[in-house]
Length: 354
Image 1 (cartoon, rainbow, N blue to C red):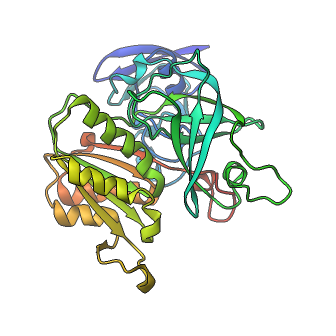
Image 2: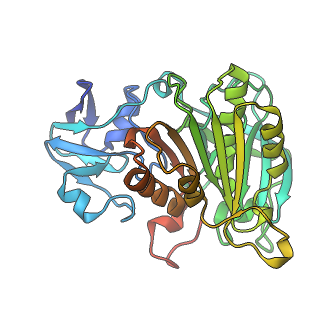
């Protein structure tokens, strides 16, 4: 059985099978609903159901509250229709034009850039040319059927291997493998063969705007931001860009020197590193505190900006709320990619990190 889904305000329609999510059906029909994690943890796909019925699947409470459910809101990545429905949701132009493919790849290099961060570069087969938008991600397809998502740090125009930034989540099946953290278990090595699906996600630079840009990153959330900056430079985009990159300690800003280079060489680019837990031994004399609060200190009025935020869910959620309520940022001008893990779908301590 299939149901008709009508998307407002565009009026576009598509069919969704009773056993597939609204997002899956939309992507199958090349209709660009916004999304990030695809597992009910980040809230990027949130919209409103104005007519008809749905079955809302498992999700994180931080992504969809009980109050929001009573208001008719839903997470389309894990909601299935139970009748013909009408939904309200902004559509994303551009992402639906690029084919999503499953491809093999070979690990070309592994570079440890911090104690808990490895930059890996993946070589695709000679016959493959991957198209993607700056800011999108890929999903590794693991042998047990699970998936792990990582943002692409290389810009779309760059030839050669695809670069990913992988942070070690102790106890996580995939990152323990990458870092060789499990005694008696194999570790990832150069020339290993993996498979991934991509490109995925609706987090990418909107090039049809002239608004100044705030780039907000925590930890390895810097990866897609790097792709966006390098893409903007390559395409000649001159909109003012300010990057706020936050970490607990200075060593967490593992490409700090590159960001400083951008600030020196790019006339419209500014870099603000922010450390939340600096120690005396760090010899840090820069900004301290929560990175999204540094943005609000510098920009109490964000009504004329676009924000691209990527990193830990707690940072993304705080920025989305505070920028809107306290700095007048329009909700349609906040683009985010929340780096959720398996643990974000469960109470603390009940599931391992990804």
